[in-house]
Figure 1 (cartoon, rainbow, N blue to C red):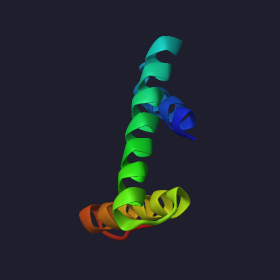
Figure 2 (cartoon, one colour; figure 1 turned 90 degrees about the vertical axis):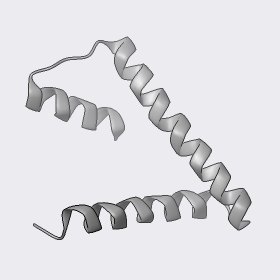
Figure 3 (cartoon, rainbow, N blue to C red; figure 1 turned 180 degrees about the vertical axis):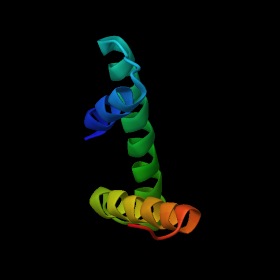
Figure 4 (tube, rainbow, N blue to C red; figure 1 turned 120 degrees about the horizontal axis):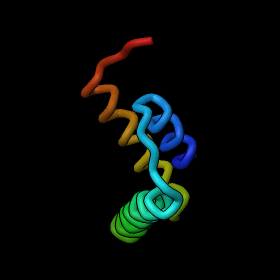
Length: 71
């Protein structure tokens, strides 16, 4: 999903990253997401699955608050 997003961004901007750059960007995003999920899981004493889901919902909520509801 993340790499598909990278492809979409590159197509929109006519800007292209090489494979190494894509892998580096993907690794940073995945590492951050994992660290956040582990931290929440331990603090809240919930499963990793529930922590990841909660973080995802929180991100959607923040985006909706920032950008508003629009089609």
